[in-house]
Length: 308
Image 1 (tube, helix red, strand yellow):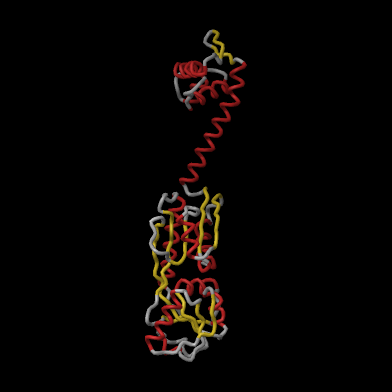
Image 2 (cartoon, one colour):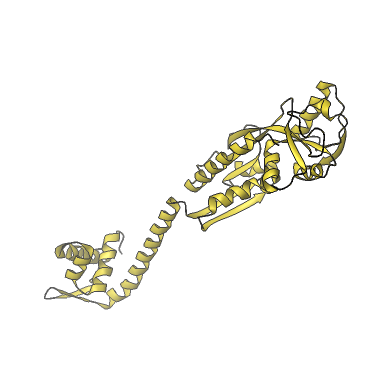
């Protein structure tokens, strides 16, 4: 039973069968005829029986050689395809990415980042799941996904996190007298109906504290799960909202012709911490590393957004 067949032996055998002679196989492979002959002899020794009849320096294939040719060709074809696939993976043109993000990132950031990254890579496939930020962290910690993005979790040994602190802006109707202010504070908003996220969200907690510290009254009209509907209502003049620059920039890019809303820096500064996350227990693929760098670069634009 052959245990140590080499790629060179198999390729030499196929070339001898294809060309019909040792000398022609040697010419095609750029080797000497004695080298080809020795390789075929070594192959026969390895399989334990003759594949060729030798007559006057000519090789005549035995029936076993014709049977083995089919198997050998399949091996070479598979290896050739494997090498091609590895080259495509190395060139970041083939592979699969598993991404999970929170709803805010699914509105614009992740789809746009993937569009930019995958535009010239038609063989890449992507699995994208949308979950709440705590679930995003759990799925990354359990290695179910390659890259996650959401609000920053507490420090965990199972997660590598790249943190981003997005400053908040105040979104107001473009028709509001506040729309041309350089900055907006709690006292400027005392008579303004506000949209806030649910009570447990960090921005809601910090917004309430900012109003309390300023001695200002907070008029809460809407409670929302995400900032997206709040921003649409703001554009219609129904309310104002204090939101992070990530959500504000996403809304502006998603609706570039929406003129009914203005974004003004909010003081005192409130930050929303968000993170790109990867599993700590295994390294990213080259493809994952490239997408991670692309996403990090894109997020710098979100960090810098202050309006209008």
